[in-house]
Amino acid sequence: MDEHLDIFAQHYRHYCRRLAEVDLARTAEILGLTLNGARVGIPFFNQTYWTAPQGITDAAGRQPSYAICVILAKYLLLCPERIYADPQWTAFQDFKKTSHFTNVNYFKSDTEMPLAKRFSGNLGGLSVACEALGGSDDTVEMPYDLCRVIPALPRISLLLLFNDADEEFPAKGTVLFPKHAEHYLDPESLAMTSAFLVRCLGMEPLTCPPPGIDIHS
Image (cartoon, rainbow, N blue to C red; front, top):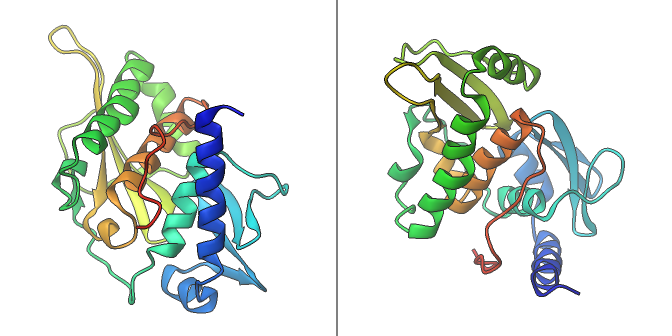
């Protein structure tokens, strides 16, 4: 087996073992999830995934990509003791725990750069793709050609901002997070979530950072 795949498999099994320690009823109540016996349903963008100590599956019973499994497992494992609600939008690098160089670079390379490259000159296509993911116009006035609030997870929506290319400047896009998102997910998982959004918009599979994530957090 490929070394990376073997490490991913080990981490996945570790997450599943830790999920057995989660009080799913309490967690589902705080996060606003659907509890069905020993499984909890997590809406993630436009799909619902079922998570349990036995594994993580999509609606068809298939295991999703490793990166999606990490995000969903961390979402349950890092559930706070109470509901946090601070809807103020914040940049990824402004979160307290994002000083790690790799996280910031991953956000730029897998969220901002592909967003600008993929939709430069295609503002209409980006608008349609956002609508397909349940995106809505943001009420906050910002100097961008397109602003869309897109539901990612219960308690966490993302604000996509995009300026198309013109005669003076290239296309530029980014994603902002609600301030309270740092109470629900670690920075790496938030960066992976915004990367997944961009890949959904472009209908591409989600990759994830190289092995070596902190499986104990």
